[in-house]
Image (cartoon, rainbow, N blue to C red; front, side):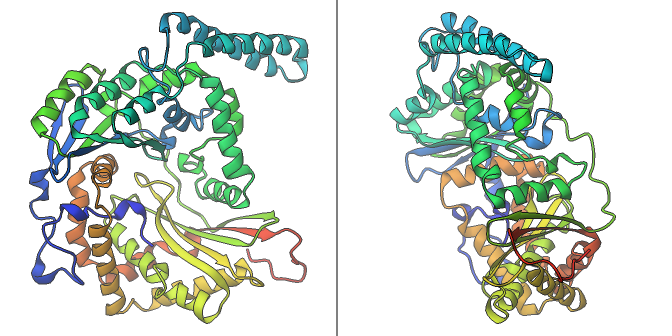
Length: 510
């Protein structure tokens, strides 16, 4: 299975998908000229694609900052900031910001005092904490009187907006919405306001929401705990080893002032890319961009992580015992998505576990019946830096992760020894082209890929060129990628072992 990153720009193409691209035709021909771009003086880049088929526009802003950019001790802050971006501004979400502002500052002071007292450990005074928490609750209640909940989102919905959302990953944070085309200036006014003058009200309530999200998705789910530990042992130095949701110890100490400071450092114009797709006049969009976003301070581009993942000296393993069905993750370190081998690794993922005709599905699920599911993902948990090629298997009832791992090893070894057939390579290219063309039929999807790939690849055109480049990925290229990266010394293995499972007398693999 290919990762979501490498789906395509379907509705932009002037020719339809075919089993192979006939006669050398390239369906992206001319697309680059249709996308108009402008970089403001402050460094913010705008990509605009007119598609006047319906009176609607989709907007996507990618902030080039994600969990991989977070300082130590502030894990999860990018995700928390994404939540807070919907809390409004000095004019949206408040009944009287002049009255509200000092109350928010008082909440910050009280939370800092509570944290400082708790940090004393055994020397902390319970009465002092109780008194501070009581005062905090009273100030919070007073501040709540000025809040208009959800006003930012509700205002967009009242004007016909939909798909208003945001999401955070290891490499970037994304803010999206769609509106009728006659509301384009509304988007510019509101979106620029929340990047220029955000107010992170209700912060301490939302901090608990995020902590609960972590508990529900990670701590209370064996698969969530497995994925977190899998990342942690896969990346012993690079911040890809830190979960995007953050660690609870960091989240519970996170203050509103931490988020404000992080926002000022990370959300300058130089770190933002906006894509606008739909019934839009590019020149008008650029004029509005200058008027509204031209006010945003330039800031500095997000600093890359200060470290690189060192060479792997051998296989790394983690096992979690839980009252759950067994689960297996096998990861192999690989270069970032910008590396020339990326498409060949896509071919390896497709050949090994890209559907019901793939080698691992045929072997584990159909023939040996030792797995209920097997998939491969090329690119986790991020794309901008060296990441992982991952095989995911769910053992069938009565079978173990070790059985699945042995079969996976044999199939990888077979692919290392003999290249895939011409038919397998052609099947990969057909699948890639079809996914490329079918994957983006809506304005919102196109906007997402334009903005995202500008951040991930440094040039959105590089993504377009992949459609043509994949034609050069054949059996030899796929085999070479497997030989280079899918070796045991470069491997990370994680598994869930059902609690109480018999282990005595069984061979323990190193």
